[in-house]
Amino acid sequence: MNSLVNESLQTPLTETLGCKYPIIQTAMGWVSTAELVQASIEAGAFGFLAAAVMAPEECETAIKTIKQATDAPFGVNLHAFQADVGRLVDLCIDYEVAAISYGRAPDAKLIDRVRARGIHCVPTIGAGKHATRAVELGADLLVCQGGEGGGHTGTTPTWLLLSEVLDQDLGVPVIACGGFKDGRGLAAALVYGADGIAMGTRFLLTRESPTPMTTKSCYLSAEVTKIPVSSKLDGLPQRMILNAQLAALESSSGISMFVRALLNGWRYKKQMDRGLFELLASAWRMSRNTEGSFVQTMMAANAPMIIQRAMVDGVPEEGVLPSGQVAGLINDLPSCEALVQAIVTEATEAQARLSGLRGSISTDPTSIDAIPVPKEEDHAL
Image 1 (spheres, helix red, strand yellow):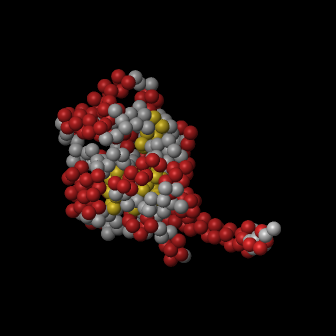
Image 2 (spheres, one colour):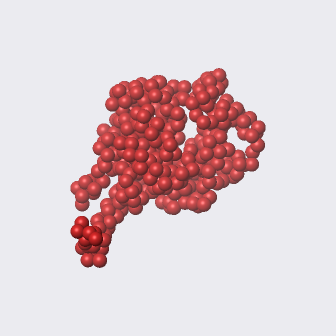
Image 3 (cartoon, rainbow, N blue to C red):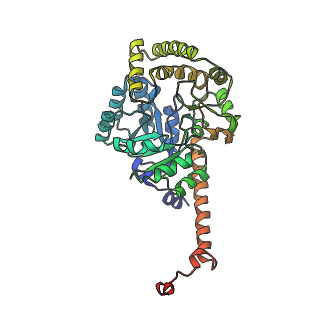
């Protein structure tokens, strides 16, 4: 059975990244720690460390922790406009991580540099129009996150986005993301033409996830229809569980939001040991390379401090809860090992059912395959 499972789930994703199964654990700030990454990659998935919210020293410690525990490949998530992104890239190169992931406005020189050292580039896109550009910049794989996904997200539903990208035939593995939690989803994505799936919320709700139990409980009790998209946190569309804090943000005026952003930015820069000028300069660079304005970019300073109240401090009523809609369908906290094995087993069973269905169609005398194909002379007048 194990050999059958391994053969049926070998895809360009597993071949490129070197993982056992075509499943990616995405990078979630303050959630995708060394412990979660280690657990997910030892289970056979491919995990990304959330270095976008880490100082270089913290990132190096996390990489060392993973490397000392296992030889399984893993990746690091970066933000192109992080103040210390150059040092983080050095760490990825020095420690020979398998891949880096990133989102909007990647730096072409950064991508060229890591690819030259054999590190794969795995961007996440939320719109079909961004796929070609991502590949031109050097993407080795594309994670296509549909609107159902958690955190920053687009407006195109997962299956429509996946279809739009696959139809472009860009020559790189395509990974479906947004709304996945089990083996049925993996099997469906593979049949649809994807090379695997990426999951964030499902890995957040595991035993190894560092998210406090008080916060996990909010996710487990969430409803599919009460996980809306809002731009009030940082000026960009972001899907979060509806709670008192999000409701308060939704009713805030633009001026109060900007003032809040400045205050939170000051707190965040103290935490990350960055000067206010450095923070403003980073925001300006980002706004020049994205579709957002400078004010919107500055509003991003809201996110770290408010998110940490829920995801680190365990006070969800005072923070926000980035989440995919799939949280409304999850009611358990398995280990990463149990989760991945359940997904693999269910996906393999689904593939077997499909194979049996194909067989019954091909042997059924009333099936399409049994209908004779007209000969050329049959069309003669």
